[in-house]
Image 1 (cartoon, rainbow, N blue to C red):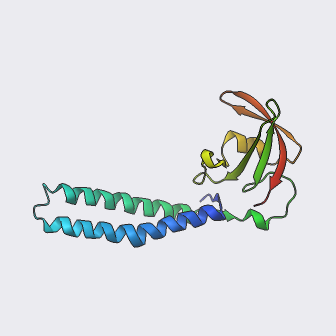
Image 2 (cartoon, one colour):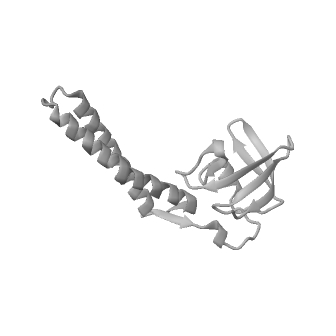
Image 3 (cartoon, rainbow, N blue to C red):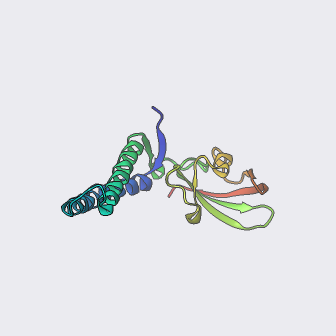
Amino acid sequence: MNKFPMTVSGEASLRQELEHLKRVERPRISEAIAEARAHGDLKENAEYHAAREQQSFNEGRIMEIEGKLGNAQVIDVTAIPRTGKVIFGTTIDLLNVATNETVTYRIVGEDEADVKKNLISIGSPIARALIGKEEGDIVVVRAPGGDIEYEIDQVQHV
């Protein structure tokens, strides 16, 4: 089975969500089901059906997270020697050659990506263009709005 890269913080976040689902949500949903059962006829009991649906969603999410954690290859970028090369987990400062604007991205796993927080997926066009390049290199990113030229200003292992 294929391993999927994940940062240390991404793994911690998934483990925290898993703990919450198991220790908080599961008992809460069980109580809601028991309470709805006490109301009588289950065929026409909307509370019961809603609680069962929540239970199904919760258990599905637990299985999904456990599967992701089981197939994760956790990479601690701070333990990797700094070479100036862009690798998974690094934080990269890019200079847009055309506009002279600077943007910072961190390359993370698929589940951790959040563009609003400048966390880009390893499978994104920007990350694919950057991987393996070094500080000072010019990179052309093929974006839906057209090609964008970036200069890699700095690569950080944070």
